[in-house]
Length: 214
Ligand SMILES: CCCCCCCCCCCC(=O)SCCNC(=O)CCNC(=O)[C@H](O)C(C)(C)COP(=O)(O)OP(=O)(O)OC[C@H]1O[C@@H](n2cnc3c(N)ncnc32)[C@H](O)[C@@H]1OP(=O)(O)O
Image (cartoon, rainbow, N blue to C red; front, side):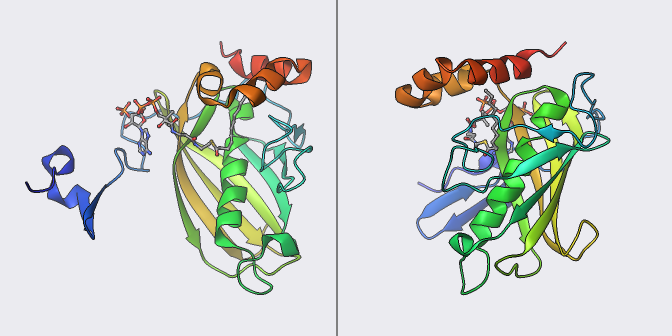
């Protein structure tokens, strides 16, 4: 039997060895009817730090010893700004950051946009361009913004520059985040961590802040 083409369109499918990889269900370009993003009235003020959403998060958790310890701040629009210092723990090639770590930094910065809209969303798709090598001890200046919203789909982009906020572009990403309910985590997370999170008043407060979305 031949491959089942995605949506009947052969151009959307790629055969890789004996496996079949279907192209993404949605483009990263917002459709014509998509709406401009709205900054939530209770979003943090411009420049205000956006706290960690979970202290064990690899991207932003203060209690995560192996994490990136990214600290994002609210931007003026529906955007956030963050800095990430590449350490020897983050190497791929000698003296250079691992691409997956840089993608994580972009992903985490994009995730912090949740606070600007008071929406809980998770990464559905993340497309990353690596434009320059990023040496150890570099401070990567990250900027993420929402471009458009279409129902549960949040179209967003992020950049990482070296040497300063206006420095050379080293990495960039376009992403599609999908809005979810808090049950997404409760239903899918390992019981042990879910129980601990639900017994932590700070964690419950953070989850409730996300849920308020008039
Ligand atoms: C407490 C505070 C915590 C706050 C937590 C904040 C965390 C931030 C952390 C940083 C960000 C992360 O790393 S988050 C972790 C990494 N991501 C994940 O684990 C997500 C794993 N994936 C999933 O759970 C699922 O696939 C979802 C939730 C993304 C979507 O599933 P679903 O809810 O059933 O929705 P579904 O109908 O499939 O999709 C809805 C629409 O989106 C489109 N869509 C879905 N996936 C894709 C995709 N990959 N590429 C293109 N398009 C897609 C569909 O075509 C559809 O379009 P249409 O038909 O409507 O047009």
